[in-house]
Length: 254
Image: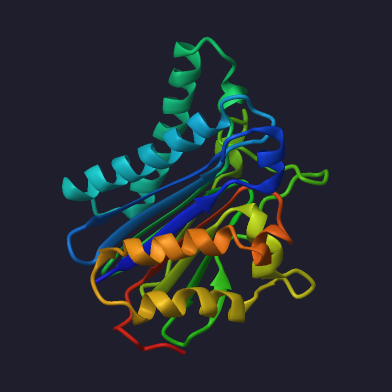
């Protein structure tokens, strides 16, 4: 049984400029053993980025959830269709609002895990990290940074689907963390190109210790407080978002 917490916070640079938080997330469960998570970071240079990010996460979760409820067993195919539909939903919204496709630009991270398989997808920066029964934290895709500093790929790019990474996950995943690029410096050991285990273990332990299933609102609230704390704002001025999920037995903390 999966349980999860999620939160986002407006970056200090956005606060100074009077901009909204452009990160969005969505989560859903299908039955007792399946979880679907999506996280998107709207492009700071796009005027309607938060709308594109919202469409991206809601569409991906809705499409995969619907397909699984209808009996789809090929997670890779479901994820591919979900990403394509998210892109089309953003394009349609841009046309309806009479703005360019690029004005709704966002990255996309997504994971779907059933009791016997899993799949992850990524376009752009940010990070998906998983931990298996051996307690080893591993990133799924290295963040897609562009040729220049602070650039990345977006779901609205002409060649987005050429650079979309979609991979199967092992059936032994017990913990998941999705985060936007504002937290990468805390989460990654860049010289060794590795996930920084203590950061993720510290985040996931309260969730592992919690009771209940599905969304854990109390922990989501605490997570938001953490994202707004000086520990984060002193090292990241961009919007920051986190989704944590675990299926470990309660209080099997490491």
